[in-house]
Image (tube, rainbow, N blue to C red; front, side, top):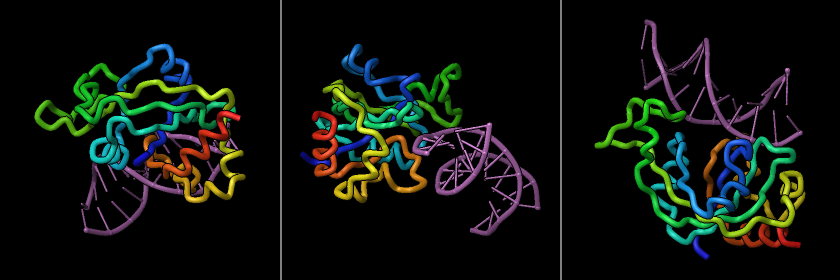
Length: 153
DNA sequence: GCCAACGTTGGC
DNA sequence: GCCAACGTTGGC
């Protein structure tokens, strides 16, 4: 597997169950340049994505998705009624991009933050770096495999 | 609800 | 271009 990823979502907003129901969704609303650059420049169709529930109790990784469409303009930035409207975005200069995700699996158990931190082999996982707030971040394929195994005991 | 960390904004 | 003020994120 080439590059892998992790995305965060608040389950009250859009959970792994919502993704399972929909099977496929567009990942709109990312309004951070670093996260956008990962999506626009590095995400490729077929890449594996860990699905993290933030603001949940407990927060943790709850399943896996896959990139099903590479970056294209996030049209919600152009919609004044949308939550993540950006007056600086335009058709000619969309600024913000999104990808499509498809459902792969929901883990039978949540791999919690606490558990991730206890695993020395996951050292360097960006999710565990202090102060990180990115909603989209890269994951080493070896870390991806370790976490997948933790999710499917 | 707290607060650390970080990004963005805007006056200068 | 600096930097203080402010807003947001997200674990705890």
